[in-house]
Image (cartoon, rainbow, N blue to C red):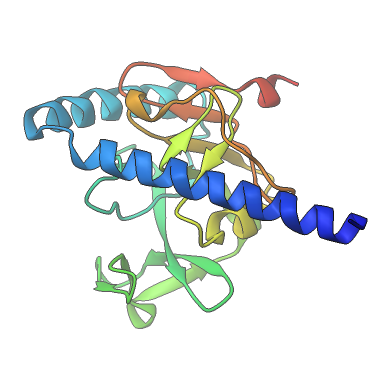
Length: 201
């Protein structure tokens, strides 16, 4: 077997392992009772607010997201922070702030995205930090998304803070990684804020 074939086999094995982990965490998140989820959300928002006040630049633009049904809710009010939200295109994701009220529309993926006519696109270099959803994270900052690689592409060479958001049950021991996978600087959960080992150097 030549090196190219070995590489293709390894990549296939990683993709298969990722798919299995995705199925596990999608099932796990869907089975969290409503009362537990509300408590998780309350505690996570408290920890996120504390993180942003203590560690994050507070005057400027931060990128957030509109959560899907099972995702951790990132919505917090921080004085002097302007929130930008993602919109997915064929091969990339861009972030927008609202210029004429909070107008969103549902995409084909079922995600609410900014309406371009009422929003302003924000240059990546002007964003101080990005709140990143995911299905699973490790304490080292590895992240498993939903397989579209939008965040990995966007966060490549991003200079600001990369902050994963998740419930504590989404923290796992190991996630298989590929060359394009981007790691987080921090992961905020309902129980703690993890300073990732890769961020520590």
